[in-house]
Image (cartoon, rainbow, N blue to C red):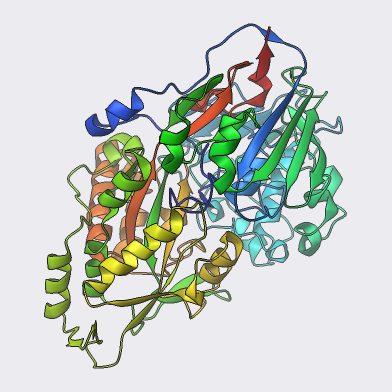
Length: 589
């Protein structure tokens, strides 16, 4: 549903904020296959009974923000704690293609340039009110209204006729959002400027996939939405469970939504509570939780635990090293590159990439459950993934040669810039599990072997919320940063790396990149081979320019109480938010 969520690194893990991110078509390659073979993506199905409480661990070393609204939230941890109620409008098959099994159906008409959405009768908010066309339009209004401060507004969504005018305050309504049966009707027709190849796939970025309860929120001003109690404490959802209680930043308690359109779910209660990543292994062994994500560096310690099913998938995600080369211009709503910025030197960026011993790190800390990724398009995207790109393998000698050639001369222990000025590079990295500090310090040691003086921003690892605060606001104390994405299930890259993408945190903008991003989603790209070629060309370009260097991904393993049935990580069994459909989860007889 979301183009991207922020989470703390991948086994540069701040817990497992990514653990249940959606996974794609192919599960492994040969050298990963031996590990994958041990895992299934769902627990065995058994006869279910009514009742019981399920305790779920939310692994983070920092309180969750608690913005319980898809249009306003960007944190993967918030998505994780509201997964029990926050169902997407549309169902999908296992390849993320929309089907009609969800709360609403969607029909794309390429000729008419429309998407027609029909919300099913009986799909109700947890207060018993029917979900309407206006609720769907209101979600767009929240995103596009500048007062709401949503980070979800993108040039892709602005392909909807009239959304840009609404965003700029030139119009009070969204002209391309048609409600043939009125606001209380169940039908919406979206009119687009251009049709895109990925529109029938979830996560395409052009079609929003959630609704917001207009009748409940309409009297809250847009500027007050994010902080309002109706979003933070008593939100409404149309998923299987409703929020009963929230302990701010610490836990959420869910009870059945008696109005759920598929029927009443089986469990009496679900509690999701924050757990420090350092306590995970102990909590798995002592069965403190019924559902708990495994931290891969602790696998050896817990793999023999009795009475749990270990299930896994490779999520659509990766950790990466990004270089700051510009700033976000809020007035224009675009990234502006600074050609004179310290990190705007391709040789320097490439050398830093060759200085990372990623494979050694994961061999040592993750028992083969994490692995280096060569390119920014994950293998799960099938032929869009360019298997010929090798990425930045560890090669200190090559790094040193590149720096010498580019004029970064050594003065004593460290190199100076080609203009003779001293070179200190400040790296921002997040706190996480106990292996996070040694991993980051190890990279700093490797870069020293290339004569690069890399220091941590603030002198230490930074807590998740503060880290993204610095990165999003282009804090001058950040030259490069170790971040991570949980990706959308449609491979378009526009919302991550486009000129107008707020999440393009490196702030790099080039003519060539703009062109390739446009080509990938163009009319010509309805031709599959053309689109694949453009994806490959973009990956080669990004690999060479190295504004973003992909680092790693991992098997995301979950320990589930053996007494539970119906817990599955397959996309078709999801609520469209990358999490299992909790309606199916129950204790067994």
